[in-house]
Length: 138
Image 1: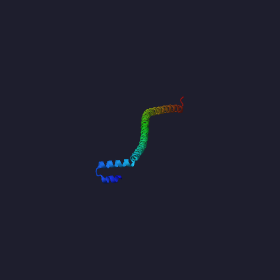
Image 2: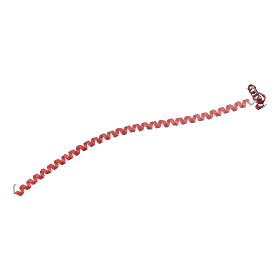
Image 3: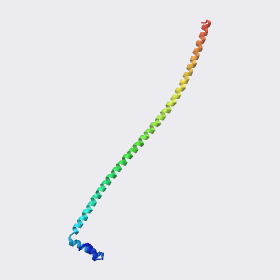
């Protein structure tokens, strides 16, 4: 008797189950069916294990990539802090050199003014000496 015949003859679900179980036992295919189901279960488990390993490797790759990005960000922050400190030092140096340049410019202007006065005085002295020499006085 086939399963379809059992379903056709017995409208009661319990009777159908009993007849199907009896059919499997009589035909000797219950063990084969169990082996097929066990094989399918093992196959599905093996595929799931492969997917799990792939997923685990992907997460490890993502975690290492994140770690490298964090390290790169920290290195960038450190480099930026060093650059800021260097720029502040450069700013201080430029301000100092500006002040020194202004002082030097003032000193050069004073020296030039003193030189002009000294030259004017020398010229006046030479003009005075030339005037005396022109008049014949020693």
